[in-house]
Image 1 (cartoon, rainbow, N blue to C red):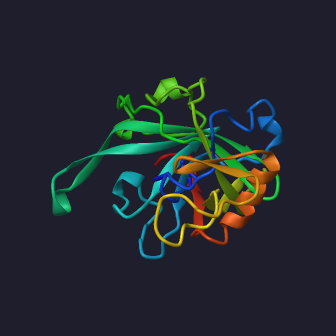
Image 2: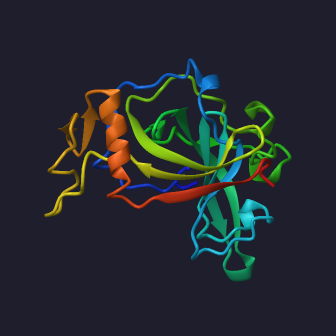
Length: 239
């Protein structure tokens, strides 16, 4: 997906300003098994202006389609190589960018992500279509995808998630998501609010939260001032 961060699979969100960020993560992965999960596989951003036949391989989806591949706590976004024009146009994958995330239960659910994609890694075809993941159950090293990264990035950003559908195992298969902002956008231009919500302190073009409670309250209030993005699971395997 452009960013489901989802919405990083799970969604295209606001620009990288006026966002709640932190140098250290508010939430750790140590109790991931107790937290909500997105279903692994291909996810797509819902856009009524973009007509997609989802049964086709994703490399044959139109350019307007925004999608990503979720694998455990990682969102993988393809980096395109485009050749030809018109009916001869062909897109292949030269690399993947990877975003690490933690999904945390609460009201609302919070998705914590490293705020910029990990360095793109070359992807070998390895006998599969352009090196893409044929199935989420296959280890990364067997399909040429970037191996899971253990070390976190310096900064983290946050999104709110409202699940709208689940599968039989309780994994999320559709959701609404929106970025956690510092406050309403400034009335006279600028990159960051001039009216930060309680418990948030402005740092450059973004802000820090003083507590988890302040972060969650900002997540709730952000829904009122930023577009909500809907995303849904398409299938387990890449093709």
